[in-house]
Structures are given as structure tokens and as C-alpha cells.
Length: 452
Image (tube, rainbow, N blue to C red; front, side, top):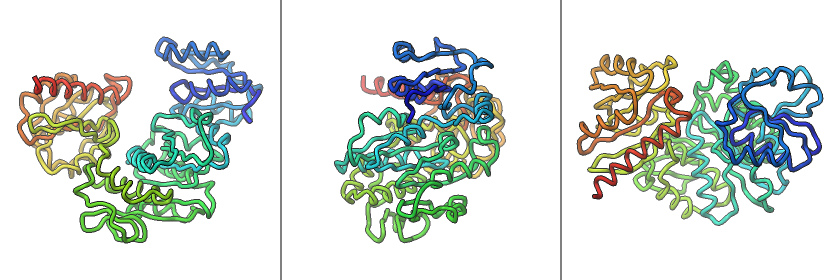
């Protein structure tokens, strides 16, 4: 399988690079096409692929590139579903899959595969699950949308290894045979409509995580989310549940503690991460870890020490009794709602970025802890209008640097500086992680000043 074929890899990035590298070593004729400029790519990766014999085409998508001589199109998850090569491949009868689906078809049979998806919380749940299994002493690999292409692990796998994989809707769209032994859905709400066109299609794609599961497999669902539970009827696997709101047969929250089938796992005060959403993420991770056989003492230790996923309500540090949180991954209002729900008062909220018509009024019910709004980026004028309308002290600046300088002059002991922009970062940054890294660097510099 995937040997001596002619294959188009559509899109570079991490998964495209790993797919092209892997395929070229199996005797395939590999053409990698990316609409971006070659000079914007990783130079070392470009040279490596060239030495392996991969044909590289950057800067455009030639009309005459794809024809019926190709056996597969391996599509980067970020490529639109209506890209011209995707539509042409469908007409020519060429299968379009992604790197993760390709890797799945090559996995050894004795591997345990865990797949985690959902609108929010999947990265934290995936990382918590991975840390719990790793700390139990089992061989485990962290893969998928979290930044580690599944194909890159194939040559490292040993018998009875475990793979914990974050799976995005973009990946699921081009998955056909993918079947996790344990699959978990954190929650569902409207997202990625620009990519999947309708909310109904988005939900359909998300539930593809469970479509190939059999009764002996495990499906773990968030009982508190109506959209998740509405899709339960189509799941063939054995279903299990977690709930923050109700005591159930499964993992649940009661009396300020996290429980598993009547066994108390940890008191809420001993679980470091803030927010009700992180309680849900932890409950989901507990369900998976227990299925794998992880002991309670290991689970408890991870929950006590885990400091969060980078760029997702990430606690950076406290300086002069002011706490700094990096939530740059909050590129929509729903994520910022979740962040604001984690605090009770004294929040200085950094809001704004790319102008794409986001409705800041989605935050109205969550503004109670906010004392000041600092608007940044392309949509900062609308942030100012919003803050003034809500009668919250609001100042705006073009750059994050200017915003941080202002915040340093107005902050008071007990304040919480929260970067949770409810906006994409592409007005000033290549990716939102760059915005978060810049924020963290500012906070690091504050630390150095305080230590002098």
C-alpha cells in the first residue's frame, strides 16, 4: 500500500512535509504543490525533499498538473474542501485523503489508537490524556492536529504502543477508514463554517470520528452537551459518559471534586487549571486513562501539576501580584467566553485582531469580571465602540507592544491580564501562536525587571 504510486501532496506545512518524505522513501513518484512562495518554507525541509527526489511546485496551482495518471491526492487539512484539485480528483476517480488517514492504513494491528475531537477543549484533553498514560509508564505517542503528524511515528512504533491523537474537523473531512479504539467528543458548537460551509455539515464531519467503530470499541461523550448527545443514536461502539453537571455512571463533578464511578479522584482546589471547561476536559481525560488502566494516583498527580497547553488559557506567571494568562488561541468569541468564565474579577482583557465581522456582543453575559478592555489590531475601533457601549474603561492600540506598555502603567495588585482576543491574528501575525509568543516574551521581560 502506498508503494510505487504517483501521488500529489497538496499543501506543505508539517503534514505535507512528513507525507512527502515518507512516500518518497517507498518508491513513489511524489509531487508536492503549495500555493505559497518557496522562500517562505523551511529551507532544510525543502532541501531534504529535493534530495529525496520529490518534485516541488510552489507559488501557484497549475491547471494541467493533475490528471488520471495519479493514484492519490494527499491533502493538507487546511486546504479548502472545494479546491480545484480536490474537485478534479473527484471527477477523475482519484481518492483524496490526508496524511493521518494514510498513516492509519499503515498502522500495525497491535497498536491502541485514541482519537479526541470536539469544538473546544480537545487539545487540553488530548494533552492531559497523554500525560496520564505517559506517567503510568506505558509507551505512548502524542499525535495529530496538536502538531505531530501521525505518519512521523510509523517507523518508531513498537508492539502494544498507544497513540493519543487530537483529530480536527479538517482531518476528519478526508478520513475514510480511520477507526480509533477509544474515541472522545469534548463538545459541539458552531465553528469552522467558512471551511465546511454549514453547521450541519460540520457536525456530520465531527461524528465521522465514530463512524467506523465497532461494538467492542469505546465512545466517550460529554453528557452535558445537547449536540453531542443528539448524535449518540448513530454510534455503534459501547458508549460511556462524563458530566460536570450531574452525578452519573462515568466521570463526574460533585461536591467540589472530580469522581470516577463513585471513586473520588481529586478535589477541585488541588486541580491547577482554572475554569469549568477544564473540569470537563479533565473528566474526559480521566475516562480514557481509566480505560487504558492508569492508576488513580498517577491521574491525580498529573492533574495537580499540569499547567495547561501553550496558548490556551496558559498561566505565564505572577509579577507584583498581577497574573498573566495567554489565551491567544481564542480566535472566536466562544473561546473568549470560556476564558472569561474562569475569572471572578479584576480582568484586563486584551481584545481584537483581524477584522472579520465578529460580534463582540457575544461576550455581553461574560463581562462581569472585566474592569478594563484593551483593543488591538485591525478591528480595534469596533472594540472601542463595544467597550464604550458596555461602559467599561477601554483603550485601543495598533500593536500588542503598545497595549502592554499601557497595561503596565494602569495595572494594580490583584489584576489579571488576559490575552483572549476573540479574533484571528492574521492582520499582524502569520499565526496566532506568534501573537502568544510575543505576549509571553513581554511577560518574561517584566520578570527580568522585577528580579533586578
